[in-house]
Length: 184
Length: 243
Image (cartoon, rainbow over all chains, first blue to last red; front, side, top):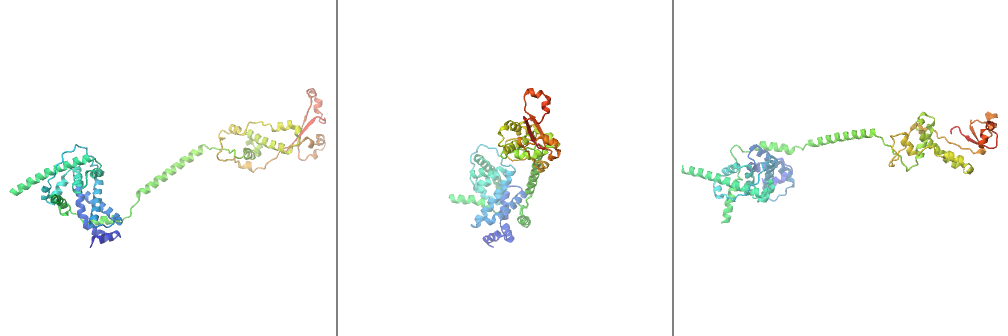
């Protein structure tokens, strides 16, 4: 069924249409949540909270295409995750001096599989991971990241630099492993 | 070239959108998750907090009301309005209680009301008796201090303050009693006391007469002169039994 029609029926309270939308987008959204929150149970709980808000707010949503719907749902999920992390006080990051920008070898990352990239990101500490997710994946700038996390822009930059350096190390490790595997 | 790099950069990000990158065993049980979500969507929000707030507010108001009642029981405040004449409010309440033993506790208040009435009657009934100014002055002369001072002296609980709310002293038994009038009789109306002595039945109202004899100091020493009631210089005042 067409997504726009599903949305229209879900707006009118059709449980069937709501379930179809949930089935369609739940996996992607769970992946989003798990990038921010490591724990599987917490991620699922946040996913349900996010979908609850999504369906409650759906009557006020104006259909502007599937991408807009997806972006809106993603934003709800990100906000839920950030609220959860803020409650746990994981953003009490001490301001550190801004390190030099470490460019991430994106070609090297690109060679990795989706599961490997996901695993690398999840291994990052919470602060680094959140800044990296918001800046590098969601495409926000440091000002937006700082406002969302309640930190300064300088802290956001330093967290991103450290996240990149850690990822670089992991990539090197992966590359070595990859080279070893190839040579064997 | 830059576009290619951008595409390359986006390619690893787009990989993260793929649900296949979820670790093994982390797949979502959609049916169970939907059941839970469906129940939440259909449930009406329960206002548990509101109940507690109402209960707390009710307790607060009950406690506040109790304290207010306690405070107002201890200290009754009576205010007398000066907008209305004070005598008209208090005098009828106190005047009939003259014979009762309660008046002994506050004699000043009763005399004040009597004085007020007496003066008004003198002014109304005897406008022509200008010659008896001394007598009228002696009757209308206030023997007691002013009413607020008397009230303050007799009952310390009653405060006479600047009036805001008119409150009258409401004594039920006193208000129901009939108003008694005083009557001042001029000299010309008086009968000869000798007639009364001779004919006791001619004075059915049992009015009492007090005779005053105006005489000189020398004559006052003479006891025989005092016994003579028929002299021309005797001032007679007739008083009603209520006076």
